Amino acid sequence: MDLLDFLLHSDRYLLDLVRSYGSWVYGVLFLIVFAETGLVVTPFLPGDSLLFATGALCATGVLSTPVAVGLLALAAFTGNLVNYTVGRLIGPRVFSATDRSGLSHRLLNREHLDQAHAFFEQYGGKAVILGRFVPIVRTFVPFVAGAAAMPSHAFGFYNLVGAGAWVCLCVGAGWLFGNVPIVRENFSLVTIGIVFVSILPIVIGYIRNKSAKRSG
Image 1 (spheres, rainbow, N blue to C red):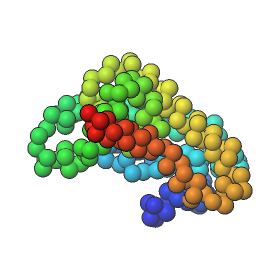
Image 2: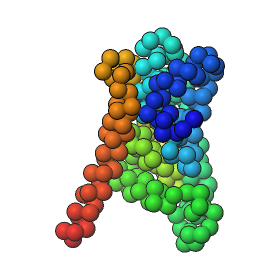
Image 3: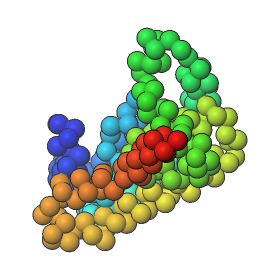
Image 4: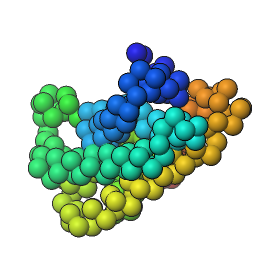
């Protein structure tokens, strides 16, 4: 299965998975969302578009809405928790490392880490919530929060709110609009649109930083 093809046609692949594996598809969805949010080496996995496709299938009765939302919210919460814990353990060494040929540099994208660190510095604790809606950033922000020694109780609160909001909004959007004929017939274009809207804050932030540097 080609990753890009899965990203653009996740609704079709999910339906095929349901037909082939039945209820086991919930486990597949859980693992994908957990890995995308919990493992800093897998930020390329689909997030928003997968949740949208899940919502579209829930609306048709193929998947159970309460089960899907509950499991995916749990996956998003526990994924971030694992990511945060790893950040607490090895994060300071990663950010202070100067050897760019080391194992940490090969496994972790330092540019993405630095980007997430700047995002966290700008928004503080709210970055844990806001970062949920930005691809790649949402994979690295919990790691950065752990590396920055954000208090665990504060992270837990923001993580809970962010996980619930992200899953409910994305699945809810798919439930409401995923089966509208024009959306269903142009799902790949809708997916591209979702990704574009998601990364828009990064683009705007990049333009602003460039402008600030030029004016400074």
